View 1 (cartoon, rainbow, N blue to C red):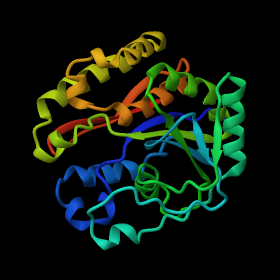
View 2: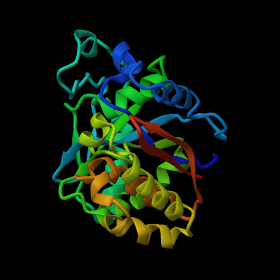
View 3: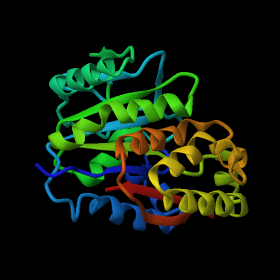
Length: 266
């Protein structure tokens, strides 16, 4: 079985695909939509399941959603009614959740299952574009409170065998996540500096790129772009799962004037 890549992707702002005013607020949303539609193009084999590292879920230990049929978690507010009626009814995978937990435990982590957790918008927004038929088994993985980069790189290393088992590991976040800068349209200069650092870092050999990620807060404009780093940490998990695979930036664009990128390993 071929080894699947692992991808850190931007999930955009709130429920943007389902709110016409949001979708129309920036033409880059149409380009992001088109890229997500073709996310799996060129992969040697179609994924059998998806594990999504969600920027919108933090827990004391790495925790996996384990429901057979996860519900919807509309973890946003202030949007029109249609944002709370959308349903992406993909199945969960208790088997995959248990397998991922066992890999984490074998690597010395304490890990947990959550049979109640529904799909939050870091998962259902991009996944519903890539798999509109909602027919792919999907499991969410939390971040770990404290947001330590080394912890999340280690989580990724532990989960790397899943890539050889038909599981596509996705890190769902945003490489620029300063909401004041986004909404005010002032994020361009800082995001350009950070995005340049990101591209440069991802072009390095694996050990060097991990060193860069561990020290991400020293990057140019780091805290201007990530006042809080929860939307960057899914990248650490993907990088840990990447092993020696090279990285590319298959998507780079601006959102409300701020530069954002996706990273694909393998």
